[in-house]
Figure 1 (tube, rainbow, N blue to C red):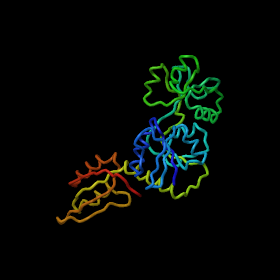
Figure 2: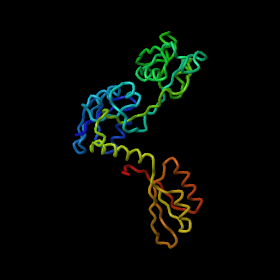
Figure 3: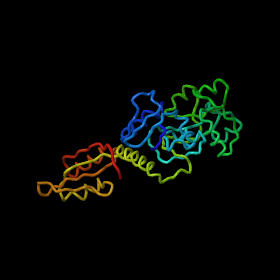
Length: 282
């Protein structure tokens, strides 16, 4: 039975549970449940603190886990990313008082406050910067005002919290994070149970990215239409009862669907429909 670690709370928990449900796995009904078994799919889920998941997976007690790339790197655990999941995206930056720091080199000799000590220490070492790192569990924006540090390193989304604290972003991003699937470093990459699990999640990712498009067009316009909707291998084309017309079906990127519908209409296609894809295997 495949043993999988899942975030029990926080920004990762809800989207992870939704993705697993879309992939056909049973999920817990109450937040107090710490372990559930899905006998149909031969999977056992353990609901753990997101920060602890990489450590449990690295120990070999659990086969794989869903966590954040930032939490994986920050943990220093002997685990590796095997599949990005596309949600819970975040960007890490340094920040300080305006005019006090212009670049990474200016961090030398400074104290940096952060909730992600492992990430920051590794980034500073990678660039040969000698600085002190102070670990705080949250609200790091106040560290400079209270004199604990001269610089902070944290997740930056809109930058509103930083501006409200009188701070500004410094330099290039430290890292880009998102939810990922991880496994113990050195684990069998061809484990059939793990591969099946990854295929299911990949199917969800594709289903979220594409829609199925159906439309009718005249035969003389078919080549132009197919150029707009090439599909993954090629579109399905079927003759209609009315001579000279064909029905076409193809997967198209969801974010481009409206533009493609407009272009198809302009070349004479009609009855253009899109439908959501709930699951797939490619």
